[in-house]
Image (cartoon, rainbow, N blue to C red; front, side, top):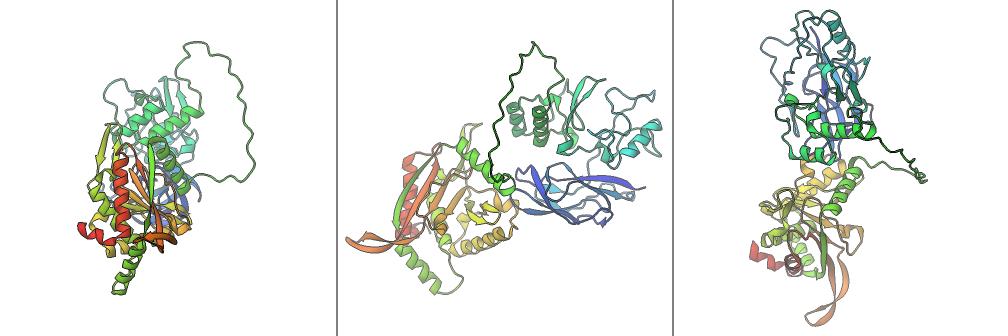
Length: 495
């Protein structure tokens, strides 16, 4: 017997909570195989093809191209045949970042009343989660089961229809009132827990609930075994913001509301802050809000560094980029001043000094500013750094960077000199503690060996989190970088 399974947008990892549908790779009625890519989505970090963990016939798709969906929202439904004996628990084995296509967890059955009547708090037959009269797959089967006294052919006395039990999309998560159980319900499932532990394992989820003034006991989780996830809290917060509360009677008569003056909408072109642009806006705002940053800068004579690069490339072998030489200087400086390769844990009130250097570098692309990360940069030489910079830069231009290549940085190198500017005060890439900025290298008058000469001069700037160190440490780091730029032989001390 065919079974309709609903495939939801999986967790794409690295804290991503939504994705935009770029292109559907299948149509309704198409036959798909296990792990076949069915849709291409764009997150705030990269383009990703999402594979389907089920094999069968596509019966429905949710969302048009250009639609933004939260993690956990339905993507499509697939009609699959009855599994062969012994194959029920097999998964596909394909793994996306933060997502494995193992067999779906067994759903917890709900007891039915012996009289055949509706249990208190149950929805009426033919009503899918959060949508009365829904035509989503599984609704008709659920109604037929109810009409026949709660048993289908060969079915146990539980309701395990996958599609009917699935969580609704963001647009459908409207709070509803269950009159019989006196319970407020947001979306498909809620209910106040009166005893037992709240199924939450993430400190972030608890913190978000406190910020939104939500009682976790009033939420039902969409994760395994009812685990409450970040998406569940955000859904409930959106619902609470858009719908007046009806569960609790007012403690005192509310004052007459004063009509709010709606400011006129400004004329002009409106550009949505979403995708990469939205992610950049959120991260920069958070950095400015949380990090007490300070900036120091210095001019340096880069003539000897430029000559050293020319001699390296004349010796044969792969070409060494200027960015790679600057990165090698950075890793040497961080070894001497490890305070700047750290992050701040304000919940624990601790500075976490990191052992590895994962070096991010700013790259401007058609999709916006991205920061690819060179992992374990402290273990690489100039040749290896050049090759990795070239690979990540090309991937950034083509939009094929993975979420893992865009996250996990511990220090950022920003070469804004490519835009023809001398200096800048960059914003720290949260949750890092510092960023080194490099301006353009241009001929300028400079006193060299007691005489005025034309030299290749560059401005270096360091923006740092003042919580991790004071100005003496930041100045020492920047001075060491400048000394290595002016006299590359200084690096020999650390090689």
